[in-house]
Length: 218
Image (cartoon, rainbow, N blue to C red; front, side, top):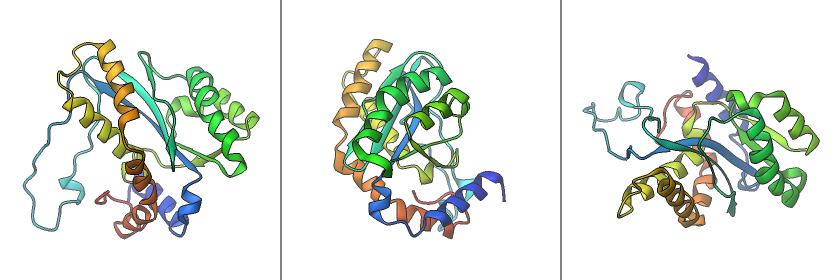
């Protein structure tokens, strides 16, 4: 079993019995990249019935390629952060000064000590200045495996956002219009759809355990 599967399986077992109340305290966050070249096209795969989620029949999609914008967002039961859109690579300093100070800190202050901040182990997130900021703001990090989209409901939110952008008529044709569309459509995603994704976490963990950490229907 590869390390990605092991990490996913381990985290799922640790949180399999969490209640909706516990999950409601978690902010799920991630960066993604959206480009002017739509990635909403579907890929069809011939497969034996009953093997849809086998490793050989899944494709891990990335929203990279072509001119685009990097975005960061966070979701929590009943709310979401503003969408942060930037044109440069994420760094530890940007993550601290913008993401933590301008977005995450506000939710920690509103929710209190029960607040948990979930983010993956991408390099900018591991910078010393990020750790120092988390400690100084008393923000508790929820360690979560990278490359485990089945266990991070914000992946589905990115998919919703991408589909909304692709459906716009006329579609954005330049980076300023793409930025405006991303900000508008992020706000237009119904909160109840986001909440349903977060409340699916117990089922996601159980599905991950059943698949030994491999891909699941989520």
